[in-house]
Amino acid sequence: MSPLKLDIHSLIVFYFVATEESLTSAAEKLCLSQPTVTYHIRNLETNVGMKLLEVKRQRIILTRAGMGLLKYATEVYRQMTNAEKFLEDLKENNLRVGICSTFSSTVVPAASAFQDLYPDVKLIVKNATSFEIAEDVSNWNLDLGIVVSMDYQNTKLKPINLSKREKLLLVASPSSPIFQRTRLDLIDICGYPLITGPETSATRRLILKKIKGSGCSMPVPIIVEANNPEWGKSLVENGKGMGLYHQKSIENEIAGGKLKVLPLPGDIYVGADVLVRTDASEHPMTEQFVSLVRKEFDNHN
Image 1 (tube, rainbow, N blue to C red):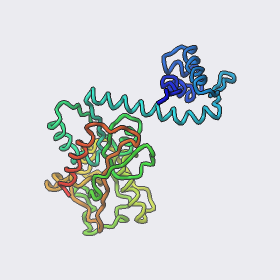
Image 2: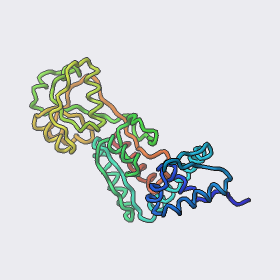
Image 3: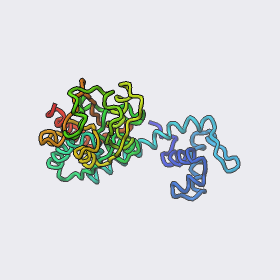
Image 4: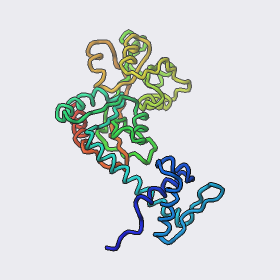
């Protein structure tokens, strides 16, 4: 096999120069001197026998060859970043997991079982809304996220389905006057106060879409945006409005008479997904964690 003409170090330097569009900015990012950066670019051009970039008025302009090479350099840099992260995960034994508030009650037992099975692995859990978790997975801040199934319109993310039919219940305080009716359609709760999560909550978007789709012409009054689902649930119990929750998360409150399910004609279902990056190397503990979470979803269905 003949030796490669491309030097990996020079290729990474080229990637930073091309993406920063500046020798100075690339040097700062790489903690190198500008002459060293220039040396790597010239060395790369000499090895391939083609001009890769021009410097005009301190601005970098890629040649046709440079633009073509940038696609490969970007992939090389991405794969090297993935490789380093994979090795760091093995060394640090960390697994960073995001759990959306809707499924916290289901996933927490799985997280506890995971820690019992793998006490040497540091499990870092973030509880947030589905859209916040999707963003964190996309930006490498989390290794995986458990979210409500939805199109997050992000090509960097790959969904792995855990469950297709997770029941959500619209509930209110048993003393609420809304229960004077024995049967309700979604249009009937139009204008009734709603306690929900922030705008990045998938369940909030779901219920607002359903109410609007029922023919409701007025905005649904959201009186509280509760980041903490337990706080929101407490407000619903105290008669401040209605709320939409995963069935498992309010079983005790319903059984204890603190909450009552609104008698809607149809059930509300969502799916549950694991989100990972499409280009991420598989974390050594991901499969084990996902298996435990899937088991929890299967157990209550």
